[in-house]
Image (tube, rainbow, N blue to C red; front, side, top):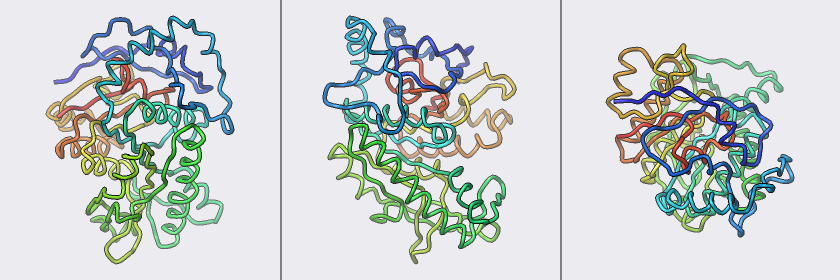
Length: 350
């Protein structure tokens, strides 16, 4: 079973959030739950003990300070059921796409993670960094090549992938989260043997592109139990120490399963799963595993959405409660997905 809904413009919903310079994109209300006054959940009030703005990297308009005090209190009050529901729960977020390329969207994601951490959730961030890798490969005159949508990774390319993902991109995200008010710890799959890799089946063509062979989340427990946010690059080594480039969606899904996460959330450059790929207004807001498998059999899900859906289905089969594919182009899409009835994409249930 699945539910479709005509999309609406979220700009009115987001008008009281710290605004972003990026263009608002479609998002629809989920019909599965009711809420007394959704229009009042229009911004992310900051707890007094946390700073939620990245003042040194992205200047954000502070027009939300003009919001009447009564409305701001109402927002806090109506957020309480969501905070109570998810407090103490682990949320694994895969971060990439447009939300990584835009500074304003990057600030939005970081602030959302910090807010969620401050109200008691346990977010874990997994990231890729394809555009940044491409820039460095071109700068070093190394050919960029793809096969079946996966990066062909020879030894020289793998060296750059490791340096960019586990170095530049990872540490930049850690710095942004630290400055926004919560301590972050940067890791890659190799650290603490968090992820053990194995070669992909078509390694002869892809080179050092890997799959997840095993996950040992031991190193993460002390980090999340101390209220810190793990930031994990999708690079891991095999038993012999050879490093592999692994799809970040796959790493996020396997980590979510190993951690017993409440939610897996994949930030993407699309609205979510569409009933009709040619109709952006046909967003499927909620669907179960049976329904999404039927859509794949009917050819309604294709291209780059297939591995994302498979990742979600696999994590659900291993005990994750829900998995969502959400529109990372929408400012504060994480808060919309977790803290409101509206959501920001497609939620898949077991």
